[in-house]
Amino acid sequence: MADAAVTTELKGLALPAQKSPGGFFESRTKYDVAWGDLMNALFIPAGSRLMRRSFGSDLQQLLFEPLDDTQVQDAAFRIREAALSGAPHVRIVDVAVIPTRERKTLSIAIKFSLLEDAVTDERRVLINKAFVSSIAAS
Image (cartoon, rainbow, N blue to C red; front, side, top):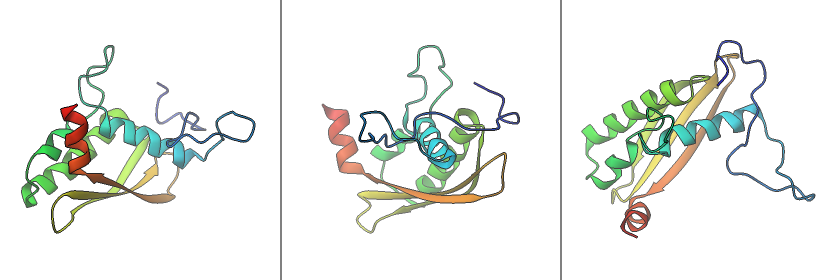
């Protein structure tokens, strides 16, 4: 991986990948690529990559626990830690973890920027705990 301070142009596959009419993947902005890198760092289980056991996070473990205020704060902490180690070119400005009233869906809003510039971008990911547990059970 290139040194984060030296990165001049961020390239890679942005998530979600979208095909162009010619069948190739479309070019995306550097913020789309950074968001994809961040999602990989957050949702790949820690220790699951053979040659990079330190990559990923243990955020998914919180999804099986009841979401109280302590777990919400712990999730925000784990998101920041995973970004520091798994996406060092991304600077987390703010993290908001918001459970729904039923506490079955978790909304994670992340405001981030790249280390090379001060422009911020905010994106959300919605996690349905029932869907995650059904995948884990199969």
